[in-house]
Structures are given as C-alpha cells and as structure tokens.
Length: 125
Image (cartoon, rainbow, N blue to C red):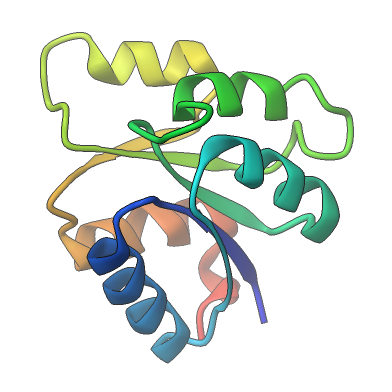
C-alpha cells in the first residue's frame, strides 16, 4: 500500500483529501505545517508528498527545498498544492524541487492522475 504524506494546515482540505485517498487504498500520514512535514517525511519515508505551499511555521517552498537536500528524502516525489494559480507559480514550484503542481480547490480526478503518473500505474488499488 503506497504511503502519502499530506502536509496541509486547513482541516477541511486535510479531512477531504485524506479520506478520499484512503478510499483509493493509500496509507496517509498528516503534517499540519512545513517543519512537521520535513520531520515526518524523514521518519516515515513516504512514497509521495502532497505539499500545501502556504503553511505556518515553515512554508511549503522552504520545506520542499529542505526535503530535496536530505539524502533519504530527496527522491520522494512532491506535488505542490496551492491556491495561487498565477503565472509563474508552476515554475516557482518546480524551482523549489516539486515534481508537479496542482491548484486548489483540488480536482480529485486530476490529482489522482498526477499521483498515478509519479508512482506508476501499479501503485493504485
């Protein structure tokens, strides 16, 4: 069962995403800020990270940059989740080390396609 770390401070987004991903057969770990996300990623070594970019304590940009410098976590795919859908945001996410980018509100089928592309077809149940 693939493990996803969801780094999201908004409780409603967190609950909705975690429930829908669990129904799809994923094991979910949750962090509510960027610093907790970095620490949990190192402990849990998830298969993929969904990273909100606007987080308290440490934002998603900084957390992703840190994860990409740590040998144990640098190869873990990161999908940025952001409400900022402005020109240049995709490039900014990729420059921070994210492997893909999705906007909020989350379009779940589109997000699942991105997760599937990064984990491979066999990752989904």
